[in-house]
Image (cartoon, helix red, strand yellow):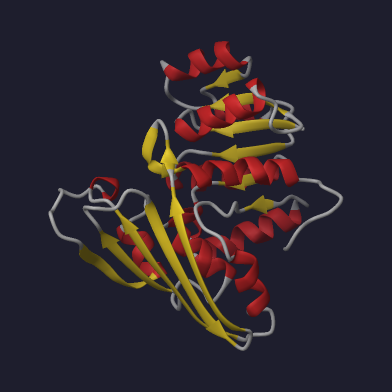
Length: 260
């Protein structure tokens, strides 16, 4: 499997190390697209992957799958072109799908070009359960409570915890586009962004980003607590989010698929 990466940040560098240096995936990252003229050439030399600043040159390289590890804006700018060039896409910036119309449009582009869009589980779990519970419309409630430190939310530090958001996923992703991808992913797997309840709590004493997921329906109840370790070189990014991309690549094309 030949892999391309959009982005040159912490997740991209982690994937290059895991795949090209440590062989954690049956494949190789051959192409990198980005705009950082300092970091890009260094990654090209260090990991023997061609660095492109021109997207047309990048997308024409012989890749099977493209991993987006950049931003919502970059993902939306290039997703259609990736699919139309017959490449599967692994989407890190789930916030690109905050617009349901855009989500449906990209589904149709993928279907028409016989390609797939993969949404890694990121920093959370329980997605298969939500999809199963909602397969016949029996999922009734989904709540997620996220606790993060003030700095990781881009806020000035206070000495007491504070609930800084209480609403639905659709509103949360607008207010915290870099912090609540998990809420949008839950909504896609379950009831939708307008029916998935979200609370965001800034906690000065927290050591790990935590997500409490609660769901009710005909299946029964689920309570799932995840406490995420940050990536060593970037405390704003969950280590599990990077691992979930590696796992998606490892399982791509497997003869046996666990869950959905």
